Image: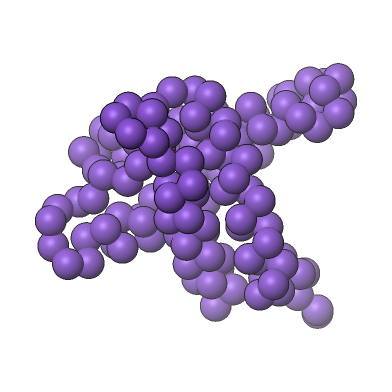
Length: 135
């Protein structure tokens, strides 16, 4: 149940991020819906949030372990670059499918990663989904 709530929180945070960082033309980030139906935009947001969770859980862990010296050297700020790169990977994967996340450039991805992590952290903190389960 917690996983479903976290995907919903990520989708909501992604929607807010597209509103905050979304620009005009090829600037910012935006969502390309699957079709033109009534719920296609919402379904696309949920699908992109799920893909981002999978990419972050697999490729993200590997990249973070490999880049530990850069984390130490930059006092953790390299994490923003990593998250921007992971958003780029999600945009690339969804671009192959013909729908999903679109990013206007690498630095837009880094800015979106910063906003997305702040919004997700705040919402997960308010809902208590970051806490470890008591066993």
